[in-house]
Image 1 (cartoon, helix red, strand yellow):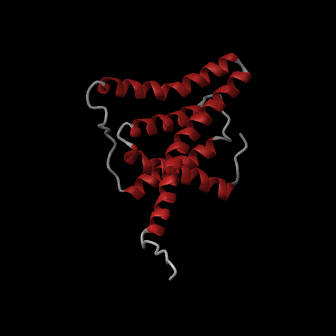
Image 2 (cartoon, rainbow, N blue to C red):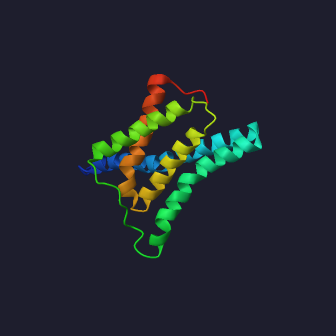
Image 3 (tube, rainbow, N blue to C red):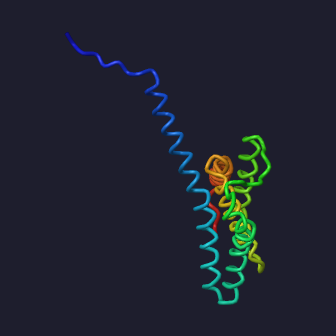
Length: 162
């Protein structure tokens, strides 16, 4: 008598669920990594131009993080899990951040004397950190939207020349 292995009906679903969870966790790491990495790149590039330009770029990148710290520091000792971001439908949260992803990619080609690129990238990074205080479930749609927007831009427009 031969032995048949019966595959559980949910085994395939569990595999698909694991893939989706892996993609979700990847987006939760990629989104802040993307914004933070690009902000760091632009600050470093500004310092190679001149010390004054570099300091200006650094100030623009650090400002949103300081504002975040100012907003969150009083809550750290108390209930730091309470995040006051309006509850939108998930599709709206993803759409908002997809728009930010597209704008971030468009800004990579912008060259002005005002370090707007660093400011926007750092503000997005600070916003995602703020959402992370409320847990990964709160930050997930925003991170996914940012990654979708940036990838969609690259697919349609190509890689921006920074």
